[in-house]
Image 1: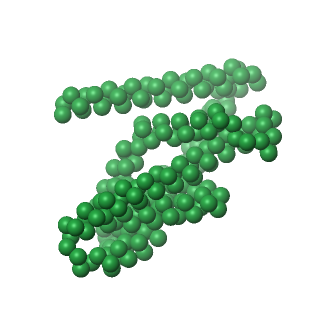
Image 2: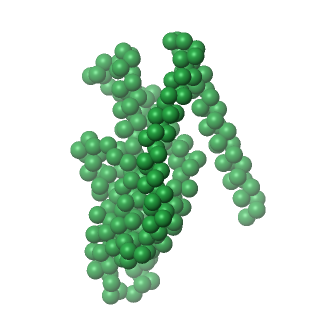
Length: 219
């Protein structure tokens, strides 16, 4: 989809002056980026809520036909927002400049293709990885222009991280279960683990804010 999008875009504007074309695609990226952000929330947030809801059903707290509790919705949205705030810029730098050196047309094509794929999947109730989709769209937009434009070493590192995510998630899950099991079957273990996670997030926020103030002062 990303490759097809950039080929169509270049076909339409290939004979136009570069300056107006770049400005037009930069404006278009506001729309395509907004659509991709919307699709990210529609798909990723629902996956997180679904996992928490299934856990509550499996534990007997809710019935399968119940609505998703408001606190689950707020928790999922807050967790995604916090994660994006803490580590989002690293992802943006990797996607925006390390895979390919994107021009505005490629950015517009990649964002538009990614939004179309994720919105279609969300409409069908199909969960997928938004990071997989946008990285694939960026690679497609770069390779369609010139195969050598894609830094395939970076792409390989991303693929390796995808593979490592499964065992890493299993390991974290096992450690979390083991930590809570030490305190028995009551709520003490989950509460202590949750407080530890919240404390770690607060520390990360603090470091991020301190870095922001330092950069602002230096600027």
